[in-house]
Image 1 (cartoon, helix red, strand yellow):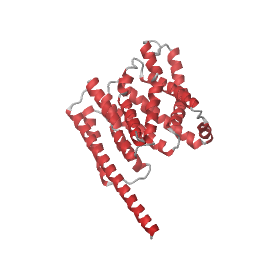
Image 2 (cartoon, rainbow, N blue to C red):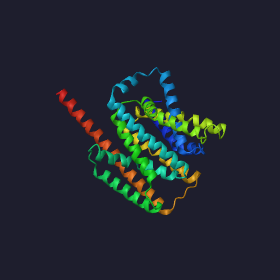
Image 3 (cartoon, helix red, strand yellow):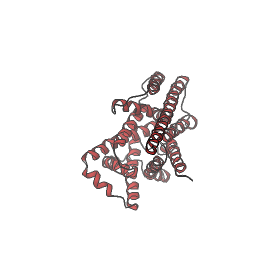
Image 4 (tube, rainbow, N blue to C red):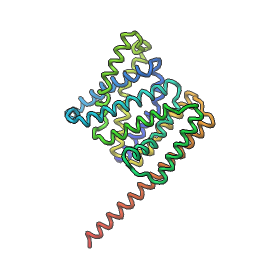
Length: 309
């Protein structure tokens, strides 16, 4: 198997695992979202720490601690991913899986907007059209829901902002996940301690299966991220951009087909507009990548011709 094909396999596996997360987090009830989130953080720290110990890979920690700007960026990233995880768990366990899927569908459009507002990037005409259609879709869904689809918007905004910050840092996924989880670990541990002292903790009091699934949450968090890292190193960016739609498609299928969440005509129309925006966005990205590749090839040929002459 070629290295690129292996990368696509890693990426597809990661997104399929993320796509079936609603089933996993539904199984963690009756624990409330904050208890699930706190255990996810604690067990993620322990699992990744074990992984880094096996790999003898702790040298990065000195660089993080010696660089206040890097530590500050990681802390902000930790806060954003904590908000994202908490919102997702709340959405899934309050029977709003469809809305969580919407959040990850519109994330690419939010990332584009962040590129314009924060990175001062210029959008191409078709990108503006895609963003405009996405905005119209949110308006239609707001009318359908009777309020802003805030779960979807918080998921998209938090993950989009998290992606922007991560792009500016240079920590590999395992190391980054460890530091981010470690930043959140103290408040998570404090909350779990308070929950146990108050006698309100569900962990260890529901069933052996529930306890095992809570313990496994660290592995469930880390493994898709590590697979994604393996894909990112082998697959072109355009390929990863297309693969990213696998997860929300599966999440939407879980919400509609497994948990029978309603999909009235207005909501379907809103999702349809989001999909049209994403198709425009993806086709424009593919076309732009092809033009850049052609331009680079032409420059290389001109350079080689000049050298030969």
